[in-house]
Length: 167
Figure 1 (tube, rainbow, N blue to C red):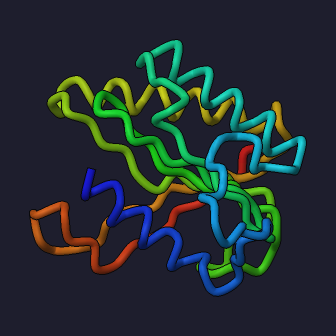
Figure 2 (cartoon, one colour):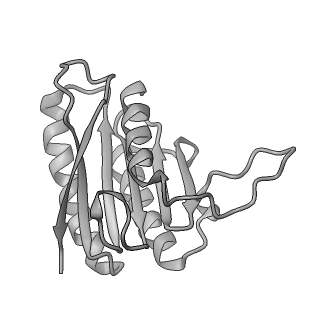
């Protein structure tokens, strides 16, 4: 889980200079973190499809999902042990790493299962995202890669982003 948090932190740093929380946070209560925080109907629909995929394929409960809305998009972070994901959908152009608008960025995947299990599941999830993007008018699918030389995945010092144009 620490790996996922570290990578998500790096992804947020990539986009953090332009991203600010879009909703006001109540001072006495914790802000909601469910899909209701996402106000853009297109992003909400895309994230709902991802939520359904995670529930159908890995039995991920909605309680393990956290959403956050920004002025330039929204993020989804899963804390599920079997298949945890971290992704961001950007809606504003000229962000960090020179990414255009309409980008779905997959920033991290972790699992308590072994690599032999995770490899095929990652391939299936990537294929799902590639089909999802045109459905919700998301033109690009980007992947953040850890460029750290250390074999210890807990330490993400630098990330590289690769972006595919889908249509």
